[in-house]
Image (cartoon, helix red, strand yellow):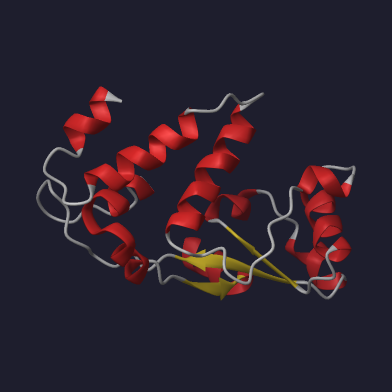
Length: 158
């Protein structure tokens, strides 16, 4: 915690960021997955992104399988017709499998809108805590990325 306190010492909303971390770490978790989920949910709630949303723990769906087959099964179980994913999935996701099942695949198109940071020029892709510490709840205005279909994504990353 001391490292975060030092890193955010001159940030205007440092107390918000430090409280988020303290609240998440105040509980015990069975594994790193539970910790990651709690961290994500804390940020979602902080920015008010939980309004009119339903969050489901995929474990509760009791779906077996692995890789693309499992992800597609989750989407179908939830009666979805679109799967939005991060860039890492481009290395393994079977896009044709999704297409054959009438499920569109889209990749995040990160906007990386600059916001004021305490340590010099804007640096994208840092922790969401940096956004909280520097912008507080107004940081929500910087969270405005879109998506791009999988073919465009694959062409851009080739």
